[in-house]
Amino acid sequence: MNYQDIIEKLKDGDSVDIHVEDNKYMSYKLNYELGGYSYFTGEESRRGYYLSVMPVEKSNGFVRYGMFDGIKAFVSPQPIKRKSAKARKEALENVTEELLEQLTKEVTK
Image (tube, rainbow, N blue to C red; front, side, top):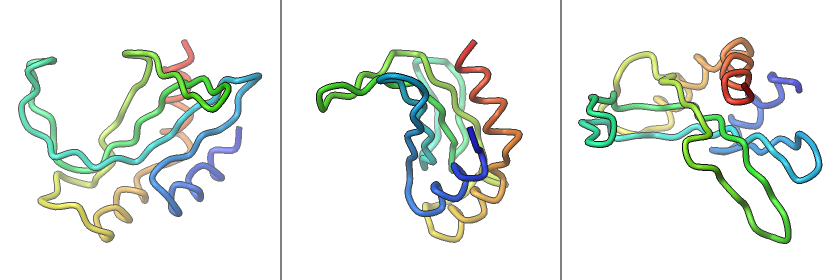
């Protein structure tokens, strides 16, 4: 898997699905989150851009996601106040091949 290609595709859109085998794909997404207190985890999350990696299955026009199968990492240089093209570009600069490889390995354990 060429992680540099994934980074380039993320520059063009919010998500990239990479074929792994048969009907299995690895989905990479750059999401903006408002942050705040999570009643589910009991923790405070930062406002900004997150890179998430999640395995998915595609068949017959349907996409199947597994609960709690993915992982995410905060990639904004610091918490940001609002979603913007500039903030997204700055967050993308923090998405490295090493980070993508680390998150992918974590998901595929």
